[in-house]
Structures are given as C-alpha cells and as structure tokens.
Length: 562
Image 1 (tube, rainbow, N blue to C red):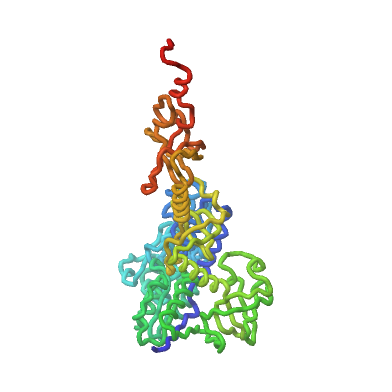
Image 2: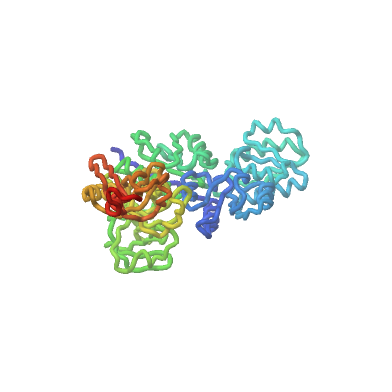
C-alpha cells in the first residue's frame, strides 16, 4: 500500500470573526433556563449549531417566532430594520457581528448617505449581503457575476464593497468592469484578509497535492469558494462536512492529500477527518505545512502513559520517558470546558495521553488527555452498547426534549426514556446519578442516546417475577392504588399490578371505585387468585372486613321477628 502524506493548509478552520461570535454566544449563557436565540444559524456549520442547541442556544429564522428572550446577532450581521424590530419587541440583543462585516456595513451606510449607489459584490441570498444591503438604505445593487455589470444603468457615483468572503480575483474583475459605469467609482475592498490568505493557502496546497479534501458546512459560502478554487487547479477535490463522508476509493494510488477547512469549521471536526484518513490507510504519514520534525519514539495518534510532574497556568507537564517532558495544553486536558486543572490531575498521577505532535520546536511532545479520554470513553460506550450493559452518569443539564448526561462526554436521554411514565419536571434530575443503557450510537455524529426506562423496565420485570413467585392465594399484602377504572382498581403490589374488581371492594354496593379509593393510596389487599403463567392477579378488599352474613348468623336465630 502506498504511504499517504496528509498536509493541512496552514490557514484552515475557524477565522477570527467566527471564533469571536462563538465566544460571545457561549458567554451569553448566564442561566441554564433562560431563553437564548440566534437569528439564523450562528455559523454555517450544522455540527456546531447542534452543540450550541445542546447548551440551550436555539436558532430561529425570524423574530416573529419569539416574544421574549435574548437574541444573538450572528457573525454575518443584520440590517438595521431587524435591530429596530428587536428593540420594539423588548428583546435583549447581543451583537456578535464580525468586525470586518461591521466595517462593510458602515462604509455602505456612509457612502449611501452621500448619494453613492452601493454596489455589493457577493451572493444576493447570503445573510451578510442582505445585511449590508439594509445598511445602504436599500440604495444598492448586488452583483454576483461580471456579466451582470452590463445591465447596470449609468450612474454618477458608485461605491463598491464586497462580501467579506469573496475572492479577490472576482472582486477586481467586477471593479474593472464598473469603471465605465459612473463618473466616480470609489472602491472599498472589504474582503477579509484571512479569507484571502485561506484561499491562497488552499490554492497553493491543491497545486502540490494529488487530491484535496475541503471540510465545512455545505451551506457555508466561504467553504464552497474554497472548493471552487481547489477544483480550478485541476486537482480532484471533495467537499465534505464530516469524517463519515470520506471514501476509501478516493485515496487509491494517491500519495499527497491536501486538506483545508472553511472559516466555520471547528478544530475537532478537522481532527476527526485526519484521524479517519489515518484509519483508512494504516501507513498514513500526517504532516503539516510547518514541517515540524517528528520524534522517533512517538507517532501522531499513539496512546501513551505519562506521569504528571507539574501543573501550570497554561499547561501541564508530564514525564513520558523521553528526552523532554510532554506538554498538555489546558485546552487538551479535559472533555469538560472551563475546569481548573487541579480538579482533573494531581502531581504523581499516571494518565493516558494522545500524541498530537511527537515534537514541537523545542523538542517537547504535545499531548492530549482529553482525546485519550474520549477514545477510552467511546470504547466503554461501544462495549456497553454491544453487550447491553448498564452504565451510570451524572445529569449535567436539561435541554430541549431531554437530559444531557456525562458519560465521559455528553450523552442524550430523551424525556420519554427517563421514566416508565411521563415526567413533568426534568429539572429535578439535574445533578443526580442515573443508571441507563446505551440504545443508539453514531460515532461519526458524536451521537449517543441513553435510556433509563430500559433499566427500570428490566428491574420492574425482575420484581414482577419475584412477586409472582412469592404470591399465594389467601395472603394479605400491601399495595398502592395505581389506576382507577369503571370496573375496578389496579393495585401495584411490588412491581406487578393486581386487579381489585369493583365487586370485591365492599360487602355493600359500590358504583365506582373512586367512592372508596384514590390514586396513590396505600392499602392492604387479599389475594384471591394468581395465574403465574399469564401474570394475572385477582385481589379483594371486602375479605379483610367482617362478613355481614356471618355477623347476621350470630345476631339472628330462625323464628326471630325483626
């Protein structure tokens, strides 16, 4: 098998604006129960949007969908009309507009106020462009392709701005074509420099690769542009959202694989793609454009043991038996966010570690406890799923539709699977340790579905079996009224329901069981019959009271006048 060399572009993944928007959104969560919304997906990445939803940050399409709560303006920005609408509704606004987008908005407003026609080079359906259009006072024309310049009427003054993720080549072409369309053409290059650098790095890497993998949301404009740029080099290019989309046949007879990622693609998705390609070909050699030399003793992806020797503000040092101590950045220490390192490890602890880089510029291995824990947790979860084992975890928070439970990372328990019956208040479970079974896993999607109901049903079945074995006709047992019907009451007597028929409630006449009983009431009942094969039990209540016929026989004699 040909050894594959994987090279990640040196400008790939989260940009400054996206990272800033995520930080703002996460810091906006003050109370787990408060309502937080983003007007449209915060960023164009469905996996990140799902993670935000798990934290209670929900995407909406329009302000008409809500009447109260906190609304985050995403990195793409919005038109001023939407801001005014939110204020009129009394909504709390949190502005996460990218600074580069904000600059384009202000330039559009400034020049529109001076009488310029604003020409926006970009996709007319993109939310960023729609926002800039609004800031121009709607005195704007959106041009996506150079052919559209021809149809533009002659103007006195034109100001040209750009969608921040536009390619500089297209922008320059359209600007050149606009020169003859007005007496004055003012050019404001609002393309984000990080976008240009990302595109240049992707193009350069594509020219030197056998195939290119572009990672990012399919609804991400900048990711689609990266794909187009790579395809234009003639190199076979594949646009994927996540690792599960990779196909082994893409890598047949390929030696150099280039990888880049859109501005909305988080590091963990990029990491999963690299790991998946490593699994596809066991001889993969992963490199980065920085050409960092790799140590001979470790390889990227190895799981090794290390002893904690020092805990610092920015990292943890571990002895891994090499010439230099290994470094665990604090971001790689725990699967949980914002935790103190002292709560995770102590000096002298022997821990498992994942090798991120065998050696940095100073010769220290860069390691991750978080990734090693994740691998271990997945192995435990997968084994429990296959074997039907019962696990335990602490409930971290309530989310829409259920609970998030710590299983090494976050597992989801739907509300319908928390108890055998309906649960009205899920908040009561937060902080509790629950037993559960894993009923569904999808590693590629980080999806784990848990069921406490499955455990309770098994326990109930076991209790029912034990109860049936011990029951005998003539016994008096304690039970709880579970449900009332027209014909009787169902009594829980230790995990199994017995029927207390309305005719067995009293020696007198009873029209409905509710005249004598109430749900939740505890009482003594008499076992009339037990069918262990069918699991049916007949119960009586009047048998525990004095029989009026027997009392009459004692009180009256034949021939008495009464």
